[in-house]
Each structure stands twice: as structure tokens, then as C-alpha cells.
Image 1 (cartoon, helix red, strand yellow):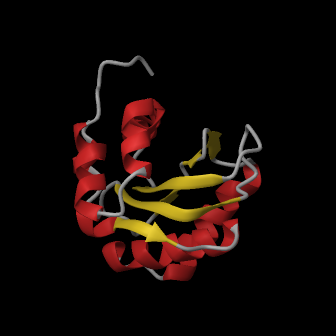
Image 2 (image 1 turned 90 degrees about the vertical axis):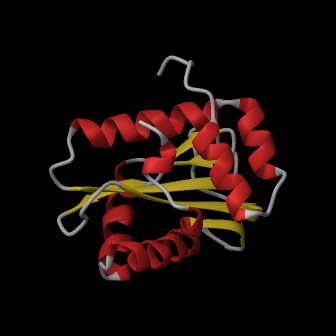
Length: 154
């Protein structure tokens, strides 16, 4: 599964500003609402509910908030690169500056997990992450996410 199947260049926020985890999730929900046609509030509530189970901040300044919604037609992503990292209650207690929001249809099952695994694999690649952090161009970030190595085991 390629990340280019999950995210369009227009769904990348290359130089975002947020002062908190909540503000960041609201911003991502607003962007996702434009792609899914779902109400921003519904997306935000779903993501927030998932975060209450445990932070999706996976470490190394990266978070992968995700959720399943009935109205989502296909697995869809929104990516943000923050100008200033925010506290995300991440597993390593480090602030987050790269966030990949993943939304999936309620019945996505294994495909949702495969997509999460693929995102985690791509964002575990130190070279890819360094290049993403070094650019403010949405097309360049999209190309980096899409072309990232696939050989690492999940």
C-alpha cells in the first residue's frame, strides 16, 4: 500500500502553526472535512475519542491520530508539518511536529491497520523524516511520503 493512495498533495499542510494538541487536531479535522464531506466536528470528536484511549504520539516528534467514521468512503489522510512542535503526550514525552491524520470507513478492518503500519514504517525512516522537516513545500512532502522505502519490516 503506497501512501500516495491515501493522501493527496492538497491534503498536506507544510508549515502549520498550532499552540496545542487540541488546536492541531481541530486544524486537521477542518482540512479533512473538506476532503470527506463530513462535518469537522464529527471528525474532531472521533479523533479526540481515540486520543482519550492513549496518545497516538508514537515518538521522535511524530503522531498518527486516526479513527473510523461511517461516512468516510475510502481511507484518507491529512498531513501536517508544524513550524513549532506541540506537546502531544507522546510515548517518549517529546513534542510533535509531524502529524499524519488517518480516517477510515467503519468497516475498513485490516486495511485500516495496514495503512497505519505503512505510515509508521515511512515515518520511521530517519532520512525521509529529516527531508520532510527540511521543506515547506507540500508537493515535496507528498513526494517524500509517496517514495519512501518499503523494505523495512513493520
